[in-house]
Length: 212
Image (cartoon, rainbow, N blue to C red; front, top):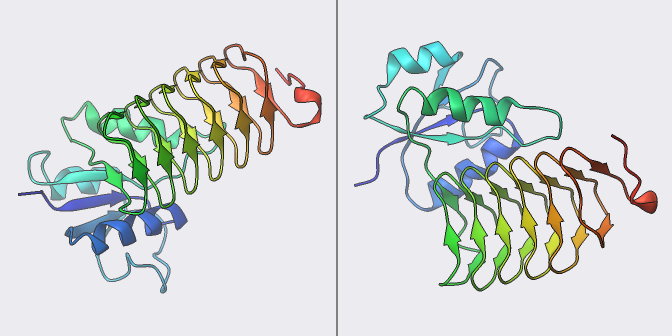
């Protein structure tokens, strides 16, 4: 039987995840956030823990599963840091997969992955641990998505794209087939990527300029 859920964060991304989980009948017992919970949030009314330490005190690693509700924003490592912090303390992160996503039977989905509404993941694609495939994104056949990636809403990755660790593909970006994107690279919203991207490079739509 699935364990109760504790959600880290109380913002918009956490709310979307909460709705998916509640619609599936999962039990959410608490939310961890230093900020007040919005009155309109589906998290309102849950036990509100205000710090990571309060979570450690309230629930042991074998009582609950965690869901990382912190959004993945370029240059902000909170999502990644929280994952490693609680993993080192033996907590497990649950995957959240929308019933409105289309996922090939041959695709391989690692643990702790979040796949949102309207996503399409095609044949033989691989999604790495703790990655977020956001609303309406398309991951075509034979893509290899590394760990801790964020494929933002409506991004499209053509067949055979390979990404490294902690890559961000921005909203509405398009990556043509067989492109390789290095660790911690950022592809800006609306980019069309037609060549490989090196580690830590930042690409913006205007001429795909390298910012760093």
